[in-house]
Amino acid sequence: MTNDPEESLISHLEALRGALLRCVIVTAAIYPLGYLASSHVINALVRWSFPASAGTLHYFAPMEVLWVRLRLALILALLTAYPWNVLQLWRFLLPALYKKERKTLGCCILSSSLLFFCGAAFSAGLILPLMMNFSGGFATAELQPNIGLANFLNLAGWLTLAFGLMFQSPIIVLLAVRFGVVSSESLRKKRPYVMTAILIAAAVLTPPDIISQLMLAVPTWLLFELGLALAERMERKTAATVSVLIADEALRERPFG
Image (cartoon, rainbow, N blue to C red; front, side, top):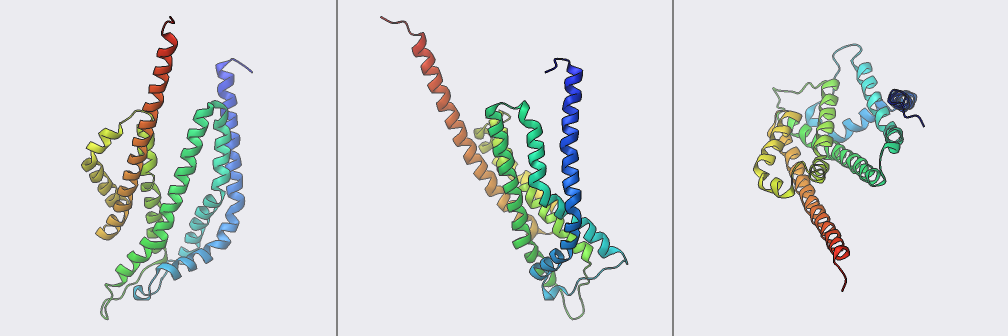
């Protein structure tokens, strides 16, 4: 093993390049399958979340459907290759981590991924149909919707991303408390500010209607409370461990006789 910092940096960069290259190759290999599946995904999404009151979807440019399917194929390829890509980055980081750090990072990656996919499923399964039904409710005999395919899928994509990101709030709270950025007691006292920040983020990440904003803000707030409860439990456990270590140290230093 070399002690030369320059050679060590080069070897790390080579390892990172190899990990990223493997991620790109597998994602690119899955991409054609994603393109083949894209039309089925669009049809399933429309059947699930596009009500009859919203009319029918349209496209307004000759190549619009093709570009939509190409973008959707990339998203599907990234989602399918996600476990492989995370594994490659994990293998790259593994040698630089201690055993406890490996466990912490592994739990964070697993929990963050699970929360993201839960947020995405919540968005696609509940929020998007509610929004489209709400939109379709404005239709009258004189006012008919004319929604484009690209606009519909952009809305679905933004909602999925927004819910996936906002569902990360328990992880953010736990990491902030774990690394001493803030205490659980301080977070509890600053609840009004946190709620304001959540409402602002929900307004930025969702379309400009109160329903979608509340549907994002309320679950995020509940998840924040969950993260706060877990952080308090973690602090109590850490404090108990420290007390035991201090007591053991005091017993070792006490003179006999």
